Structures are given as structure tokens and as C-alpha cells.
Image (cartoon, rainbow, N blue to C red; front, side, top):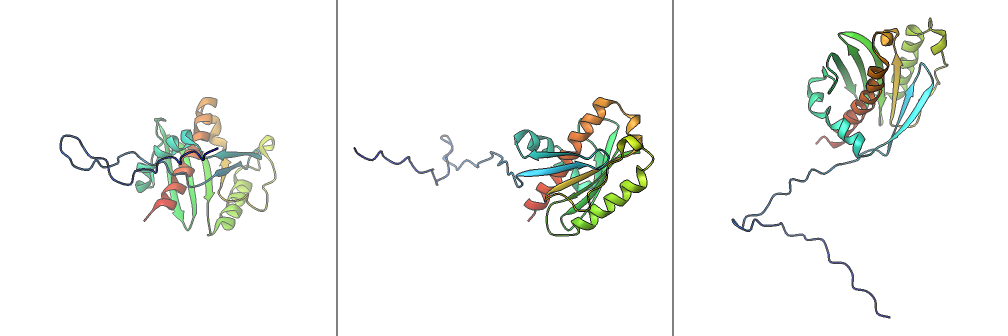
Length: 188
């Protein structure tokens, strides 16, 4: 039996426009997937979700990318909802608000940096903010989950929005976190 021929190598030459004979620039946007998964922890309930990076998540995150230069702005697709963030050394803190009222506070860590300090701060903030809501009370773990992680504290103002809006904010938490991580990992 003969060996089957190997597949042709990918072209290394640029494609040319037939009419002008000029090289065609490749405008296909590469979709980098810098992280395999994100550990998303809601401190109030103890709920943990692991988000595998996929094209749908990248699409959601890409809506935030142009807004990150401003450090604050309206949440895409959610009129009346806004975010504000601060970032340092592979860590980020951000707030999601509705009509200027804080609904959710998040901490995000994805690499070497003060992630454990941020996790302790989130735990202290949670203890300060939520001790009066017994049905939400869970013990905050002393150590954060594996990197990258997103820790979330729901405030009592969550009752000011609908269940559907709260569900959409959960997706916005994830998308904003993935956008921040992506921007950090792809900066020159």
C-alpha cells in the first residue's frame, strides 16, 4: 500500500486582487481565546460557575472592548445600567449599577498580582454589606478559586431590578470580566 499524499501546505503568499494585481489584506478578525475558563463565584449564595471560553462568550465580551478605555459606561444592550472599573496588576474591581444605584460589586484576578488581597477585600466587603440577609449568608472561602476568577457580591439593591435584568447582569459580569482579561493579555 502506498502512502497517501500529504495535504497541500497552507499558502504563504498573499492573495491578489484579480483586477488591480495588488495584495489583498486579510481582514478576517482572529478570535483569540486567551483563557480556557473563568471561575465565577457569587459570594452571597456560594454559587460557582465555570465558564468555558467559547465564541458566544467572546461575542459578548467584544461588546465591552471599545468601552474599556473610558473605565465606565453603559452596559451594552441594557439601557439604564452602567459599569465602572479600576484595574491594576492582573486584578480589577468593578461595579454594576442601575440608574446610579450600585447593584453588584465584582473582583477579578487573572495572573500574578494582588489577587489574594482582592479576594480578602471582597470577603470583608461581603461581611460588611450582607450580614443582615440570612437567606444569602454563606461563608466566604478564605482562599480564592484557581485563576482566573471573578468574585461577585450582590447588594440588597438587587431587589430594585427584575429577575430577567438580574440574569442579564450575570452575563454582563462574565462578559466584562472576559473583555478586561482579553485586553490585558493582548496589549502591546
